[in-house]
Length: 530
Image (cartoon, rainbow, N blue to C red; front, side, top):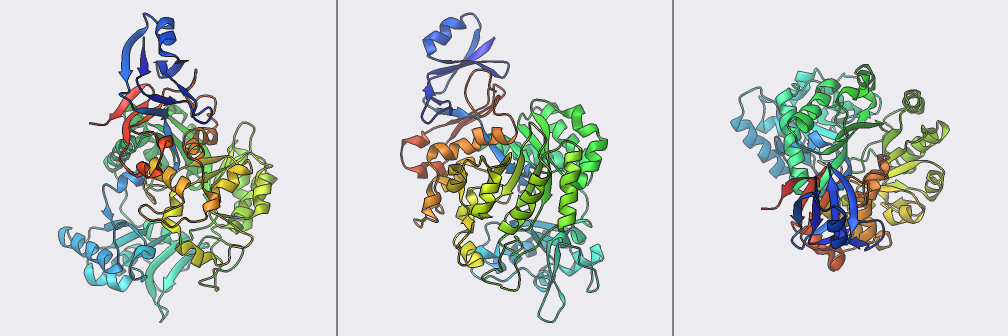
């Protein structure tokens, strides 16, 4: 027995503007699409439920191709600094938290971004000490490539002026050479390792909050990287199993496996005991560089606004090569964070030298700064570019101050990548950016900040069809599910995102409104607008 879906505009996404009148599903799978009368006749006696879309606009389920699902859930549980407009405001929020928490309890905050502040000063150690002298404080920058900590946090971690800086890390210092509490890249681990561990209940609460919020934004799934941040990889896997399977928070979770927990994951038989159609494991994740905001993304030239650096290589060439070899030894694709063009060059070199296992695809995550010769190289390889369109709205225009003259560079060049035949998948990198796929689609088609008219690199705009495709067909292709997900057609998963208005119908600014009417996973309505 099954469900007939009718009464709205249904885009299959097989071709631009292709629609069908109705869809029939059974047991989480689409069995038929086409004219309503024909489907009613064909499945007479089997239809036990009719879902009236009430004029809504149905798409294949939107899937975020790069996110941190537990991290997104933590935004509902931690001190949030993303809305701050000045360093003073961020410090005041820390002060308020210190006044209500018992002495000695860690104050954990995230989301600060000095590029959005009226002053560009960092929340350094001395300022944090003034408002929270008896609480360890750790504030993660929006990009998660830098943290700000106070003296109590440094003391808890045993970090002092003589601590050796880890390879691929930066310990910030003030003009007098003293630690200023700003730790970047691998140096973050010096303090992160001293934080009290997350409990099972905490992980489950964060996951539940994240999934429910994703449903409300129209997401039916996400490719997520969480396994290395909360102590035991096994505990984190079990949290996903508990929430998605036992608590029935249905969501298509495709988990990347960070190289730091690869051995534990392998000992746990690759998590096979919890795999299902809703929960699976993907490529091995690694980081090749940092982020543009903190000038740690690895460029092929010095930063225009700080010629003393061209970024940070997280791994030496030998280390990077050995990690790729290790992935291949275990039959795994590689998903590498690479924002700068020099980082992408290093990664692509070894991905091509040690080819991806047949039937799998490597990922270049972010790919914000590339060069034409790197794109030509990518065309020879089974490699996906995991792009985050919302970065355009967040990073311009300040990113051009970092890069300077873009001659010879491809900067957030999503249209160029697609035009050159490079498969792209669309994501948010939540919690670094808002998880809403509609806001990502808006950024891709307008290349603007919401509420502003300035268009950044207009030639790199995507069409509405292209932008929606990267969140449907693109995400499916990245996970090698293009034959079962990402389209509305026979044999495909009954995952749907239903909007109240048609984004093909006019002004793309409607995407900035709360348009999600219904979210469907495996044939079940998991979210319905009240």
